[in-house]
Length: 182
Image (cartoon, rainbow, N blue to C red; front, top):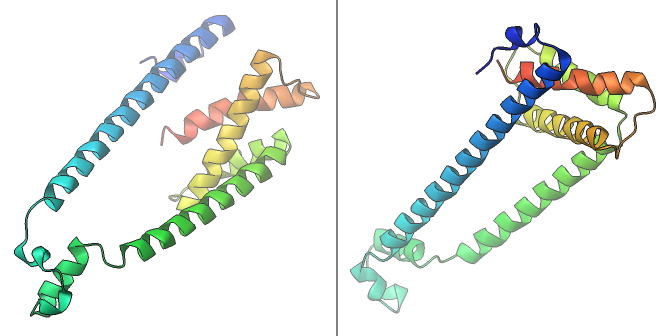
């Protein structure tokens, strides 16, 4: 991989070409990682299904009161997913709430001017300590918005109001790279 100091000595066209190559390579690595994650999740699910198929004599009991020990009753409840629907419903509601909050946050950042997004990104770069999960989520959303604006500008579908905004979008990519080099 080319180190960023070497890129400083290249012409702007060559720099852009090299950075796009690096970006493409990173995209491929992310896609590979996502594929591996999905495969691992499938394997976990398969192992879980296999464990569920292991016969436990107490599960043959139709009436839970015929089981004698509290441990056997708990095993029955766990294996038969007693109260599972209630827990599942609660999990679904929590996830829906989290998704709604993320959509509101994305909309909030989408409406901010480019200068404000860049300043938020720069503020996170100045933080010396580890970021909380919420801060990481906010930073990701800000960077995603800046990336989408850069892409739209390159595609000609977003026309910055002035040269400062164009420069800010270019600078934001460098900040993004520095943040993830830590």
